[in-house]
Length: 139
Image 1: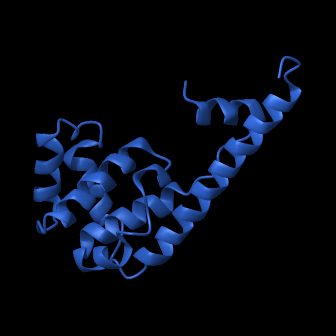
Image 2: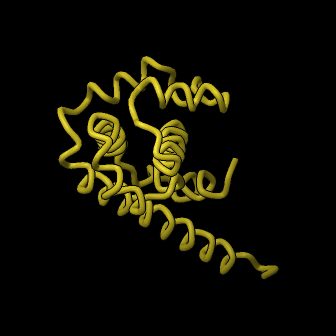
């Protein structure tokens, strides 16, 4: 169990997350790859709550880096090459992401939501660690 997961269990509350924003963001980028250049620097893979979304975002960033056209075929091929397609949900999930939105028009807004939730998770982790250390009699 990683420290982040352990901290949420310690606090007894659900981690701040915006899975729907993650779905709409990734779907929007895949639906309209032209928005990728506007949002690529906003998010790190670790900002995503769901592991499969982290994997997909990393692959999208790499495709962009190499100026590879982005669509379900190129993305699934890149994930398959890295043996990560199944961990990302498979081709069916990638298609579901694309079908989840009409366009990428709100991708920047969705990225900001994801970013805010990630900052909240990091703050909780730092705070919880500080509380644990303060309560440790051997510290």
